[in-house]
Length: 378
Image 1 (cartoon, rainbow, N blue to C red):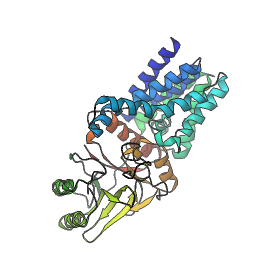
Image 2 (cartoon, rainbow, N blue to C red):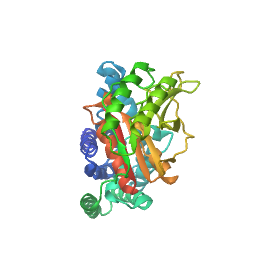
Image 3 (spheres, rainbow, N blue to C red):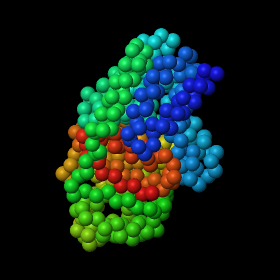
Image 4 (tube, rainbow, N blue to C red):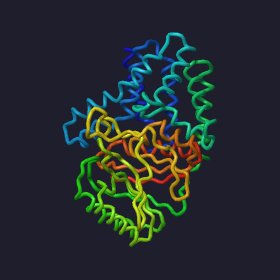
């Protein structure tokens, strides 16, 4: 009975904290608190499962739409995605309160870095951007310390009060991520699948791109993931012509063959050249990253985490990377002070996924005082 109750509490925390309102993120502090109160390992496991499944609730419908299948496929992927998070937290639960507190922090860190961090969605530590706005690495460590104290159980009422004060301060006094002068992220509405080699899509999107670019005032225009379609000479010429007509520097998502499989990347387009400036470090597992398949998107773990774009040291986050912890921290450590997030989320429209991606990027940008530019295809 206790295990069921903890599972329901976990669902409530995950659903309330993870949505398109970044201000609600600090509710995740209830997760370590309840982890510390869990009387058995089974209770801790059901708590973690409830939290993850509720926070990632958009996955079943989104995956079914992406694959063009029934909801059963989405449900299987949903449960599979939760398994690592649940097993890691279950393994680090301990009957001893002090060990349990250290175990929660160990599980949080483990889920933030590869290999476990490859599935490290909805990390509680993301709330650092609201609780400790602008404090950077100090704020990140402080958040881990606060969660550890909440798990341990000493002076919980005082710690909850402190959390509420920090929360209120972050909401009332924290500023939204600043926008870069001269940059504009453009939103589109074109349905396409990654890696599909749908050449007709390239021409469809060029028409849409011309309309969007004509409405943009900034000299640097950003288009979503996969906007250029499959990289061909014809596609490149069309986009160079677009850059020439508008007089803009364009950044747009592109896909291309890399010998075995394909790359999901970001290109810089000018009137004279198309240059690949970033290759996705972590494509979404199963739907794109399938190491066992020759049709897999490649994971470029060796990609430079910080790239200079338009004179700005930039952290490029393509779609799935926006849900994880390690890509943005790796980029920040390398010196990035601008987050550029692009995604194609037509398959997730009407689910919680676009909202939590935006919430995560907003929180990290707030924590490190980074500027933020976003371009979604919905």
